[in-house]
Image (tube, rainbow, N blue to C red; front, side, top):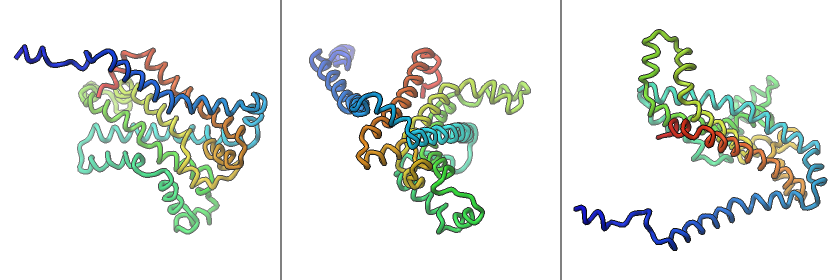
Length: 286
């Protein structure tokens, strides 16, 4: 038996040539499909010089798109953080009929096209629906306004926080919370002193992913916003509008700004991983 095991090849002892080819192939594909397009975006943004790029970024339409994107993120990310914590709490701390269905519904935005989600919101809140007519009669705009954009972003980014928290909270179990309650802690004190510290890194990961997705959402927002320049055009929508108008420098300048925002999010995530590697590994085992 021992001789058989000793003759079994290990996955870590493949020929050096094969290992080198696999590494080189992975690096090459990563450079072609991820790094090269990003570099081209910045090159095109600076095609007419940095002055033209900065002028494009400071135009009223670009400033409005940037401001709207930040407002949508500032609203949708905290809301989804709260909802994600609540959903993860319900799923991991309680046993009830329909739990599997609830977990499936959480993943629904992953399986539905963002364009379909935007159209669904238009059908629910549009002028031809009962609810939409009532809202319009009471001077409450949802479609082609900020509330509709926020609703679309909330739907698309909903799973990110919950999906990061559920495995962590399942692994941790209920013992610590039950001990805190036994010792006389209130529900809120138990949450802030026991539960929240245990899930803080998973929560931060989920918030970062949610924020990155909210900044870059195009499909659902493009449908529900109406693409009104200077009013309901977020950065991704504005980039598409500028590109279709053959304003390449302006489009790529705004795209480079959006890319920089995404890279800053990635840098924050990487910094946390490096600075607190041991703690993040402990909380992300699942």
